[in-house]
Length: 403
Image (cartoon, rainbow, N blue to C red; front, side, top):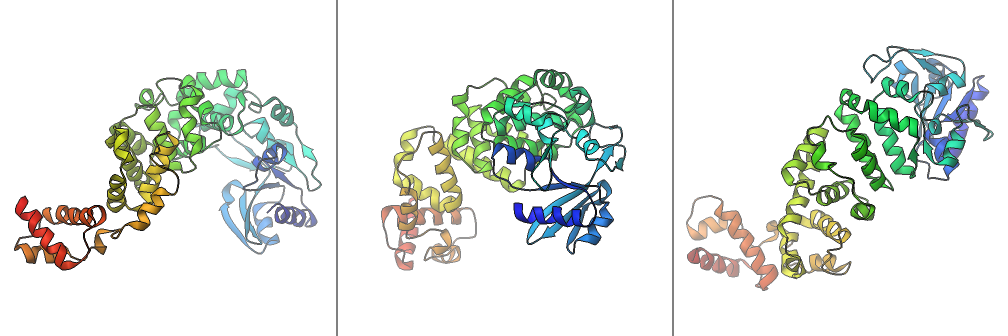
């Protein structure tokens, strides 16, 4: 990707324009971190960029951004710009294209994001971002109150970068952040949720948690005191770092902060989490709280029943969750073995159907069908009876008469 990005840069330069790598790419390159995307700044106007490259997407052309597709990779190419006054702490009143790189860098949020690199690898660093990288601090470009007044989300970004990089927030920046925290209420919940997801997926979520708790950044949410009611010690959030899945990381946070299922649902709804993610987290919390007695999870039949009821994906996630919380009942690979050994992995694989049960028992449709089918699945998987229609119908009659 870096080689192809350099080719994009060179093509702009060959066309008579200035062009530089900017932002997160330069920061991560200097830190030796993996590169995930590459942004380019240029004095070429958007319509000129479109003429230079054969494949482009007008992703943010009003603000000067064109996505260039080159050899299967996407590169955001943005015209040097200055921004007008921010009236709502979210968007500038206007964007004006300029011809100077330094002016473009001056509008950026933090010094470590306000560096550029030319095609030869030389760093342009007018705001001493390299020094702040060495000092491991997050500091705004210019006055912090001004930067935060322009876009209140920058306060949450400061916390996120501190979590990702294990940096500290510079004192003046931190002071302004705490003074202006309430203005985060003006930011759309989707943008807030995106930053919180990046924070919880960071390398040092415990640092971000401390900063969020101490700053009051989320105080305008009525659930703030339930999730960030205290500053946890590093060990409390260590299970989060054992998991890569976003869903399970949120589950751990809810568990270690003793947030109940109702509150967790409110938090996820307010943050606009996707419905499927909300449903999965609710299931994980429900399963976790259902097994308050650790001894229950040591029984293979419990896991077999869970596998049939909820399927491999959800039960495996639950296993990874409790393993991260040091409550694993057996060694890695045992769950997969149990799943493979199940004669019936889904109710649909049972040798009898709900209609056949109705015909056999001369009963009308009702909730009893699902309940009886689940009992039959347990008999096959746990008690070892054959998955044969005649055997299952006989067992169904016995269960029905017993009930």
